[in-house]
View 1 (cartoon, rainbow, N blue to C red):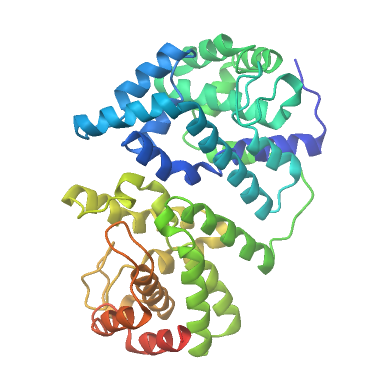
View 2 (cartoon, rainbow, N blue to C red; view 1 turned 180 degrees about the vertical axis):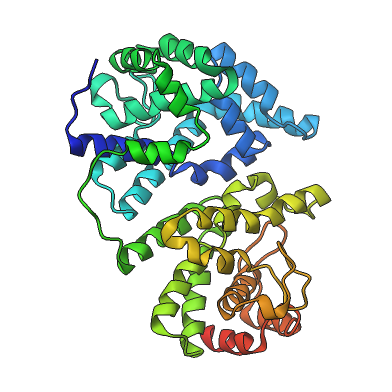
Length: 401
C-alpha cells in the first residue's frame, strides 16, 4: 500500500512529524498548576491512557496532586471535574496555535503549520481544537498522530504493543487507511531495525525526501534562534520574553563594547538560546514560589548542561554551545555547571551573564516582585569581580538607560 505522495507533499509530511511538538512548552506551566504535578511526567503518561472516559478519570484521579497535600489534591480534582472540558480546549488550542506560529517563524509552509496545529484532531471528529473529522484533517496531522501513538506504546510495551494500539485506534483516533499502511510496513523486520537503531537521528536524516537546496544565511539563523527562544520562553509565564530581552541587552552591550558586528550578531543568537536547556526542567520547579530543595536545585542547575548538549548537536549552532551554556559560571570559580575559572570565561559569556542577571532581577518571579533598575544594578555592582565582569557592568548600565 502506498500513499503516492509527490516529493513536496512528502517533505511537508516529514517536517510536520518532526515538528509536531513545537507548541508543547506553551502549556507546561498550566498543566503543572492545574494538576499540581510534574508536567513532563504527566504528559508522557497521558499519551498511554486507553480510550474512554473511565480510563481518563482514573488517570486524572491518580496523577493530580502527586506529592501534594490531600486538600490540594481534592481542590484540583474538583476544579477539573467542573471545568475540565473548557480547560482541555484552552490548553490544546494554545499549544496548537503556538506550535503553528513557531513553524511559520522557522519558514515552513502552511502545510507543515497546519499539520502541527491539527495534531490533536481525531479521525472520528472527537478531537480538538476544531473537531475536524476524516479527510478534513490535514494528512500531515493524521500521520503525525499515528506516529506519536505508535512511538509512545512502543516505548512502554514494544513492537506488539505499538501495532496493537494503532489497530485499536484505527477509525476512532486514527485514519484507518494509514493504520493499515502502518501494519504493513511494521511487519517488516527492517522497519524495526531502523526504528530501534541507536543511530535513529542519522536514519531519519537519510529518509528525508529530496528537496530544493535552501541556503541557511544569517537572516535565517536569526529566525531560527528567535523561534526557539520563543519556545523556551513559553515554558513559564515568569520567563515570557526573557530570552528576547537578554538578547536585546546583549546586543546593546556588545555594541557599546565595540564587539565586531558579525560577532555581535552571533552573540545575539547565543543569548536568545542561552536557556534552551530549561525545556528539560519541570515547570513545578520553574513556578515554585519558595526555596528549592537540594535535589530540586540540582535539577534546575542541570539546565545549563542541557543547553550545551542541545546546541552542540545542531551543526549551525554548535559553536555557541559552550558560550551559551556557561552563563551561570562565575569569575570566582563557584559557578556551574563546570566551575570555570575567570580566565576560561569568554567575553561573550560574561555579557550574557550580566544580561541574564539583570533581567532575572527586573522581572517578576514566583518568589518576589520585579525590582527597579536602580535596585537591580546595585545588587549586580556588589558582585563585580565575583560573578560579573566590571567592564560588562559598565556596559550594562549604559545599555539599560
